[in-house]
Length: 352
Ligand code: 5GP
Ligand code: MN
Image (cartoon, rainbow, N blue to C red; front, side):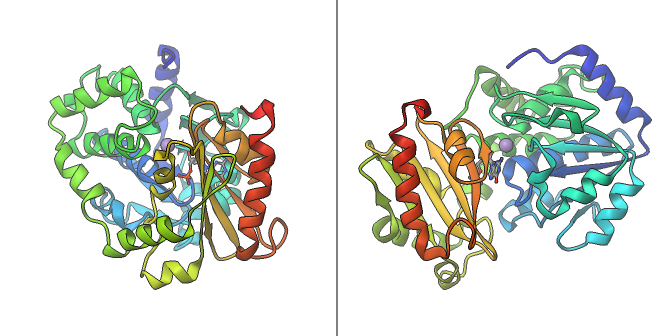
């Protein structure tokens, strides 16, 4: 991780000090890192006596309820459920934080409302290629496990917390550890020395990691595990180029009674097979096919997502979408498309 500039911290402190109302935002279909980072910053700002609200593009998934449950009533909303309230939150605030995304288009339908706000904007993110021009202050760092970890280091540099994790509000500390835990897939990927230092200080500060792990990994719906079995035994294909892919249609999701967030982490599983170098999960959505990619070192999931799936992300973990009918006519054509483009991708030296 690069050193965080003390002058940027001073600017951040001034922006917060001068703000009357603050809105915290994250990317669409917020994951543990997005929800954890927003919740943590919300508690820190509230702790400072600031008027803060969290506005997501769409609702936070049920499995993160143990984190969002700490947010005060009426302080968490989303564009999908309340577009009017969201527009008012943006027009009525003087500072907006963008957490865990690098450009407004990652906020889906909320993009325009967000872009139109005249509030000052601060980015805190760990993705490649931040759209710097959109923001008044940019904290962007790819050499960190997660936005939650990066936010932790930023918070500790402020006068208020002065390098002492024990001074963080307890709910913020727990949310930060949760965000880091989900984005590293429980310490499996993107763990840096600074990540372990963060985890260590948060444990010392009293965060109950066992409880977080219990909520994240021991409370799944039965349908999730049964669907996982079906997908791995029947749907998963492995190409001769070492690409594993799974196509999941809505009918199957419904058959197992699953909701948004219930398939979190599925895409990682095929990577545990020796000959698999990249894993792709295609999930049928209302008007598109959502794509998740994970790769092993030496194969760029980010590049593959950008070249063939209208997306991007990190070097080894990326996502995107296929438009229907522009990219593929229907979910039935996804397998053919995946086979073709990943074959081209894996056989082009520039991508390795
Ligand atoms: P996931 O597969 O967990 O949905 O996403 C993996 C990573 O890729 C995340 O860091 C996420 O922010 C990024 N990502 C997912 N979908 C998109 C997309 O459509 N565009 C871009 N630029 N990044 C994405
Ligand atoms: Mn993240």
